Length: 160
Image (cartoon, rainbow, N blue to C red):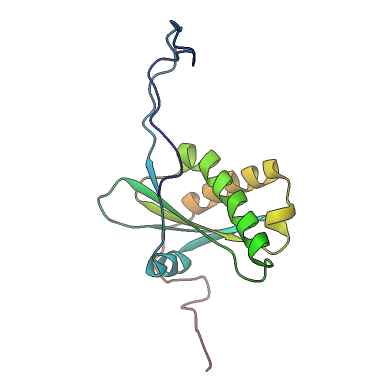
């Protein structure tokens, strides 16, 4: 599934089909963006880089494959609320990704946006946009670590 990011036209023509003025901006090659759906991809992103913002948590990983594709996933737990609230939070996160990822995402990376209870739904949308920009900057400027490493060593899951 695509995020609805179509190709960028070389010239700007009015919707009425009349002769438009050519656009002075050069054509921009936007990375192709795909929505992640497989659980294993979400788990791999969860074990990589992350940056928390007031509105959501961003998890990101460089895939290391040759495909120049940006993949993005969205998740909201039941802590967010009922299905209506979770869907609203995911819609807001999709719009944030649609607005910011084409300009700041790196090809070959996976991104997962995790909704926060209360904050993702109630936060002002422009603040969510600035959260996304700052989170991407922090994730991409972080020093490289091997996948699964965390500052305190490997994470322990479960009992024991």
